[in-house]
Amino acid sequence: MFMDFVMVSMDQIANQAAKMKYMFGGKAKLPLTITTTGEPD
Image (cartoon, rainbow, N blue to C red; front, side, top):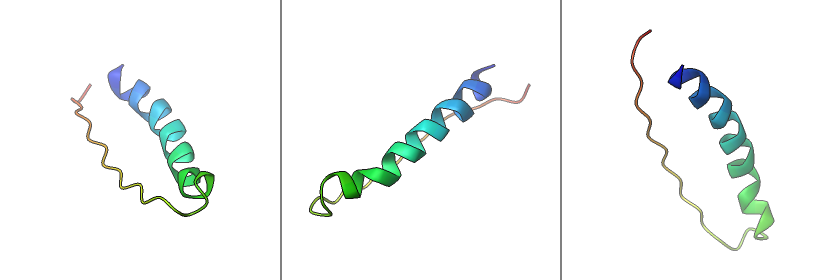
């Protein structure tokens, strides 16, 4: 159940993160590290 949520939220996070450089006109460095935990079903 948790991993299902992670995959849905990761899609949204990745799409938003890809746009961040352009939202700031390329003037900001935005390093991003995402860590998650998961357990087998």
